[in-house]
Image 1 (cartoon, rainbow, N blue to C red):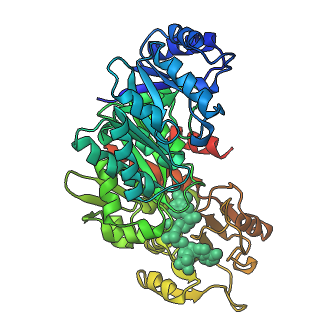
Image 2 (cartoon, rainbow, N blue to C red):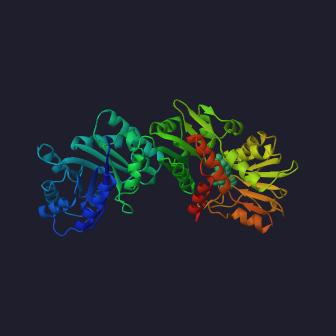
Image 3 (cartoon, rainbow, N blue to C red):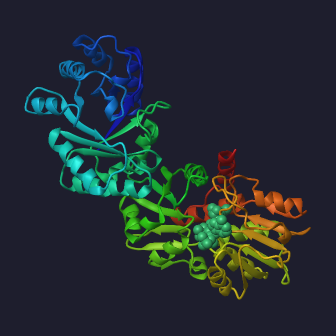
Amino acid sequence: MTFIVASIVERSISGVSRSSKKAFSLGADLVEVRLDLMEIDRVDADFMARVRMAVKGPAIATLRSYKEGGASRLTKAARRKALKAILRSGFEYIDLELESDADLLKEIKKTRTRPEIIASSHFTRPVKAREAETRLRRACKAGDIGKVAMPCEDASQALMLSVISMKFSMNGERFTLIGMGEQGQMTRVCVRQMGSSMVYCCMPGKPAAPGQLDLRTQLSLYRRDKVVLGLIGHPVSHSVSQPMQEAALARSGLIGAYLHLDVPPKNLDREILERFRNLGFKGLNVTIPHKKNVHSLCDRLGPSALATGAVNTVKFEASRIYGENTDVIGLTRMIEGKIRISPDDSALIVGAGGAARSAAYVLSHLGADVTVAARSLKKAKDVASMVDGHALPLPLEGKCHSYDIVVNCTPMGTKSSGGRIPIPARVFKKGTILFDLVYNPPMTKSMKIAMSREAKAVNGLDMLVHQGAQSFRIWTSKEPDVKAMSRAAKGALR
Ligand code: NAP
């Protein structure tokens, strides 16, 4: 059983009273009063007792020190006095810091009438598994409940914390292990599977720590039947898949979350996928640069994954990992909505990664004569050979001609990307249509170049929506509200 703890961030006692009342009415099991964030006139037993009386339910008192990421700058002696006052004020739990409060922890652990002690420790940077585990073990020993928080720079660090959590849970420890920041959020979403004793969340708009979910969301995600999904890639910050897929979940009446999960290429292996499964993920989308690697990590492949050698959708089945490539259907829908391809139409695909494989497959099936251009001629040839196409190296030399269809399958033009656009203006002529798979920003540099040559230009948003809708069908066996997905994606781009 995990206690859902609402952190109360208020400056005054009346604020604490109001917020904690709301938290309990919404369903919080406990509230955490962040005393370090309050305007405190006197640090004495009377003040602490007044704060305690303001909360009509079980409460944790936390006086987080500046050193551990809080706002309290009390001297050692003043801190000790304040904590002693808290001990006498009737709080059910007190948060004591493993380092700053080491003496007090030893002293009061043996006393009989005292609040439950949460022994806490906060890393300021990500650490290796061994260090995180040792720290949590020390915290569990020092208090009744051990609490360790660590900032996560990528999803594999949060997965590492989840593995440690499951081990502690199996050993019957009382603990909470928190990944901070967006990349640590899965430790909050999947807290039930991790076996944590507590999960901290916030009142709307008042987070006490980076990555905290708001109380309503945290409560709904504690359900056993939630649908947890995500996008693995590196980078993933440009994506609008989260609002789009969460709109689909909401319109289908499903409780769930879709997380953007940064997984550096060196960390992607079968074990990482297994860890997502163990945490209760139903499935994943896969983006740059993992589509080809994930293809080789699946147990069972769908027809489009088999045809293209790339996977953008993973579904965790009971004992197997299923992979499919919904870029194929996404791209087909986008192209068919815009043009009718005739057999002598020429198509230039720029890039030779996962999306390029789908583009080559789709355009060749629609009847176009396909050329693939990439920085590595070897990779271009590899993709072109799938469809009996031609291959060219990037940058394109002077002799390259114009094409009827051009598809940008590189990330060049994405909001965060710098560097030169690999598509020269001369590949466009009046009547060419450019499909730029990039959609953030909605008007890319390549689109501007194409339009200046009187070519038509379409960004990748329609494809994103259609591939996402197909992934949703695979994960949930439900028909998504495609219009709502499109609205959410467009809204996120504004
Ligand atoms: P990927 O498998 O990593 O392939 C990326 C390709 O781009 C590789 O061929 C890479 O070449 C090439 N590339 C990277 N930087 C380049 C540069 N500066 N100049 C020339 N080529 C460069 O990624 P992907 O999954 O195919 O995705 C490609 C792009 O399409 C991404 O921006 C992705 O977000 C977008 N996409 C959009 C949708 C949609 O629904 N709209 C769907 C799929 C993909 P090297 O191999 O030499 O590195």
